[in-house]
Structures are given as structure tokens and as C-alpha cells.
Image (tube, rainbow, N blue to C red; front, side, top):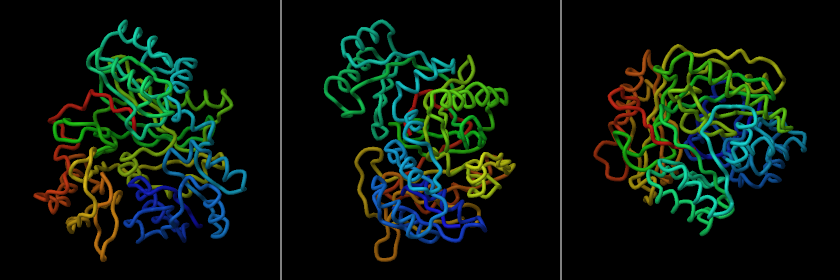
Length: 427
């Protein structure tokens, strides 16, 4: 098989690594990919939004399967375009990806089909939004309806903060078209976890649950980021909660999308929170999560290409999982998620024989890896339990200690800190 992975981040590198394990896969193309993928894939410099160029390349190279990583090309209809061209692709159509493209739409579907989530209201009028916020009080959550590059969610601890957020979005167009409408919703407390699943219409095949750490600094302090580390499975997640999340959330939303003539095929990501009333939905995404993918896929025993083909063909892929635990820690550029410098050389990493490295924001300069993004890489390991996986992972990161241009959290997965009860929402 020839496989094409669309995207350039750590999630896509993890997908490339998993495809490379399969004896069925002869060649992998990463579009556009990153420097760290070049050992396993041919990186091709094509804009992910240039669907015509991607289709032409897939035809020229006789690509057998395309997997779309990021959300923007999905919401722009890449899968529709590939299907119209007669090419095999794994991901949701534009109509199905709308579950991530519009938060208000997602909330409406959940309300219609009784899927547990926070109470909410959607607004295009600022004065109406302000009245609702003042009536409900704080803490409260204000969201831009559309995609806002991970910045469209404000968890307001005061009414004044929520009112200001609503005004910035609706009145001042803070996120452009994405904030022409906002969703104001109830703040939920509890422990967050992620549940991804391979989906084809009403057929749902769940992966292991994972836990992401969003805050930039130790002790769950600092601003929210794209994710500073993760582990899977979640050892303190009650079995009943997993079953409830699958049977009352993930399967019903897949069936609801069929009913709405938006049948979903691809990776459905459920961002969940375990409240005192049971798991509820924070968000749905239409693709693999990042960095959850980096710690879930290493535990999958099946060949990823065969799983996808089985799901596309309407067959049960019979997922098999390792009994081990996988943990990953992100190394970020100093200043992230704010302004940061690029081009700083990466040190040699140690202990990789016990684990793996997933590259995200990196480039090559004079034969050496240098930083080119906010989240630079993820170091991960598997172990018999979470403690062992974390110990092996942190050993491999010692070469970054004392460097001014990089930082990483020292407490990912540590039981001594509580899971954050601050909403993260956007991947």
C-alpha cells in the first residue's frame, strides 16, 4: 500500500510512525509533513487547503489510502473532493465535520438527542448575550461558534470577564467569522478525559481513554496550551464512566449524525468531563486529538491501515490493545503559548531505546534539528504502569534541563496534583 497523511504536526508524525509499523505499507507520503518525519515518509510541500493539488498528487503516485489529520481541510470539504475523485480517504465529509466546525450546531444535536452536556444558549446579539450572562452568573463559559485556532474559548470566573469576552467576540469581531455567533454555557467541574473512536455511520469502535494536560506550567498553572503531555489509558477512570460515555454519548451521537443526514465516517473525538452526575460532553472534534493520539496509538496492536480499511468496508476491526500504559511529555519553546523564538538547536535526547520521540515544531538546519514551532516534540514511553512509563519518559528529557530556550512540565500524570477542573475545550 501507498498511504498519504495530510498534516504536519505531532499527531501526524505519530500516524506516520504507526503506518510505518505495518508490513502492508510500502510507502508513506506526508503532506506537508515536518523534518522529523523524513526518516519514515516522503514529505511533499503542498498546501493542505489545495485539494486539487492533493488529488492530482494522489493520482500521480497511485496512493491507496489518504488520512486527513487537521480539522481545517476536513471542514473545507477535502473528503468530499477526494470521494468525488474516486480516491479512498478516511475522514468525515464537510457536513459531518460540522460537528467540530460549529459549537452551536454540536450543542443543538446534543440537546435534540438527549446527549449529556452543559446547558447553553447561542447568540448573535450582544445585548441578549449580556442579559443571559448576568442572569446565569459566573463561573460561565463563552465560546466563539467556529474555529478560532484554539483561542475561541473563555472560561470566565466573573460576570465582568464573561461580558467582556462576549463583547470582544460579537461586537469587535475578535475571531472574525468564527465569532459572528457565540455559545454561552454552564461551567462544569470534574476530571476531563478524551475518548476517540473509529466510526463509520452508526458503527463505533472505541479507543482507550486518554488524559491530556492543558496548562503550560507545573501544578496546572499558567495559560491553556495545545497540550503539554498526556497518558493512556486513564487508570482512575471508573469502568462505569467509560461504559456510560460509550453507550450514552459516543454511540448516540454517531447514530444522531446518521439521522441528521450527516453520517460520520472517520475519527470522532469526544472531549468529556466526569462530573458528579456522570460524564458530560465538553466538545466533539472530527479528527484525532493532539497529543492524545501520540499516547494511544503506541498501545494499539493492530495495523492502523487494516483498521481503517475494515472500518471503511463496514467490518469490525477487532481492536486489540496492549496491557501497558503510555505516557508522553511535550517539550515547548520558551514563551509558548505566547510569542517564542525559532531556530534553536535541539540537544541529543537520551533513553530513546525505552520509548519514542514524536516531532511537531521542528526543522533541519545544517543537518541538525532546530525548533520551528511552539510545541517542539513529545517524548513518550510505555511501561507496566503509569509510574514506570513516566519515569522512562522523563529520563529521556534530561538533556533539555537548564536550557533557556525550551521548557516542559515536570508533573505530567503525577498523582500528587489534582486533575485540572479548568475547562480547556479547544484542541
